[in-house]
Picture 1: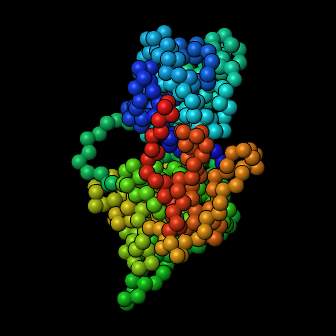
Picture 2: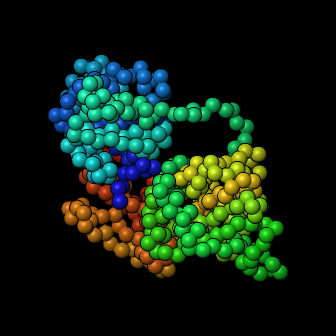
Length: 422
């Protein structure tokens, strides 16, 4: 699988700019959508000129542009002087960052490539091509020129209105955690593979019991058991949410709990009353809950609320997730029309080392024997799952995010910048 796919956060790196000054990529971004343009050595500078000419259009959309040129700092300096550069131009003397992005996205490093990033540096789209059409040629081919494509891809069809908030729950709302085709496949699995009434863990007469409790919870669940599906979900979801957990909460090591596909059906009046997710002995090691919506626009109601932090309702789009501490009181409101499908899991503290499954070592990728494949998770239990490998800007090769010997995923914190220009 790609190590830099839509929904993944772009890796951090350090490169010199046109003035020879080194700063990390994450320090240069301004919390706005970004077109990151990477040009190989000897690439036609006309592409840079067109992006420079479109500067006012990017600025009108509150979007930024940044370019990486493979070559010595003098190359970036020359290009910046020629353009009277309205955006940062960085030099990649060894080509390591360009190769890393190309390897992660499985594109040819000899061609220009443009990555579109959201304000959180997560990949929205990318385009790589041998010939970048312009003007009459673009019209003849029926495609947008690269700068027009970037503007269209970064445009926000429904920009949010700034709000002054007095209270808000400490939760993460993350879009694009799963692709739409994956969401549809999971809904189909719930339909075909069977489901049962959802249960709750309760303390009854001093003992913990698992029981169906309609007064508290009504929904139909399918617990995923297929190890292949579990591995794929853990790999994708792990690498999409782990950087956010590290950045927001300094939570950098976990293992997945079970994965459940849940359906809240309006005809049944389904809901889940206010509760916490870590109040019994069997789930006290849960740290974060992940609620990932598999559909949207096909139902009404079903939002998550956190009554300790106000009346606000949280409803990510299909493929998006709400990630929150299991200690927060929360409720899934009744679905009043249609059916809401969600994928649910929890993040637990790592297992003790003596109980941890042994990870399987990486092997060469069958499609590219010279490139190591992402390490495969242990199929024995969810505790051994690990996300796919991020990219090392220094070597251009995937690097393991750090398999925790205690059986969990340890992303190791935000990517450590590498001075590739030394």
